[in-house]
Length: 504
Image 1 (tube, rainbow, N blue to C red):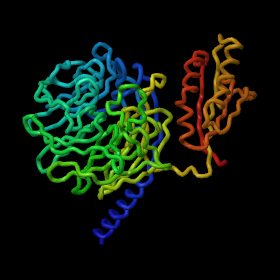
Image 2 (image 1 turned 90 degrees about the vertical axis):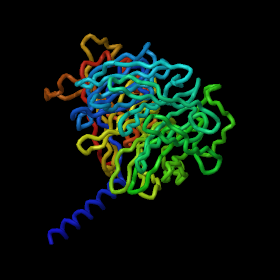
Image 3 (image 1 turned 60 degrees about the vertical axis):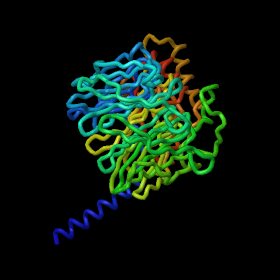
Image 4 (image 1 turned 120 degrees about the vertical axis):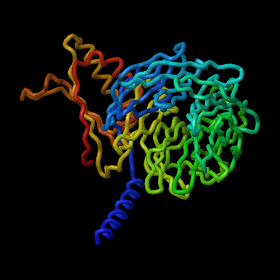
């Protein structure tokens, strides 16, 4: 009888888990300023029970701790080689007992190795410069590949001299060149922006996206670090969406192995001369699923097409949030839709949309999934130079907000030395946000009139109404709002901000 009860409980829990996967949502937990000029890449790492976030931009890498509530705490920042960058490809890993962060310094044309110290901060221990044979110029993507006895770092680049390179990672973090292949008309290694590794029956395979040559490739990796091409899938103008092939990830569900590929279509680029093949055809956006056969080859399997209910325009990063019950939840960061779209991939390799959040800023490679004590988080940033923030979200069951609106209340106290003119100017700028930010559904404000003695010196109250989660995020990170804080924040002595949901 006891075994029957346990079996029933297991079935019920699996059903609840499957239902939860069908209806999860992003909820912002925290955001912090960065010291760099922008946030291009984000990665994370767990070290001895502590969790760290690494934010790479132009000139430096910022380090934060991340706690189980999603709160980010600044730790340190570290200058990149020649203050170049941005730190585009970033991957943290343990090599024979030592924790390292590997960074592709995009315009410094180098790969930098940092040792991760006890508090999560960094110490540079090695640097490899580009040569005619290594294809590191305009470095974009890094991938650590662990073999039986050795670990390797694969490097992909863009623009100048594209190709794919493998380095052996020494125990001290130094890199020894093993092999490079130059891009050609067959393989898709011109602008490798995404890479992923699958292990199949003891063999190792690497998958790459080719941004400029519009396709994906697979490679067999051998124990000595050598590698060879297995197969290649190119874009077409009907049922494939690989123009500007961009993010790459993968999952194993039951006995099936999948590679998921997104693209930022070339139509979204306006810089003259940047796109090498300007004769592309635009026929929409979509996320492509490839099934991997027993020889490690990519086999086209399924495409989720973008429509009016999804946010898939300009995909720049795809992260695996969780895998449970033979299903996976994926997060797709988009530059042009400025959103994170959550998707479900089932055991049969079929993608379906769950929910999305309009985060209020364009995501450009800066999206990372991280788990703490069973809780799923996403950390995001933007390449925009006026954003200068890193943001954390938890991914949890969607809260029913039907029939409700959000009230965003700001209580302000201005500094005593702020002149009446400065205060009035700041107030007017705040009020004008309702004209500059289209997601503001209602706005009112007033001066304190309470005589109970509990105002804590706060004098001005602003009440903003939003219709949904998206509206608040768009407001919070809208340029007009960020500009206001930057210009008039110097006059604020104190502030209290509270949000609540109420019936319309």
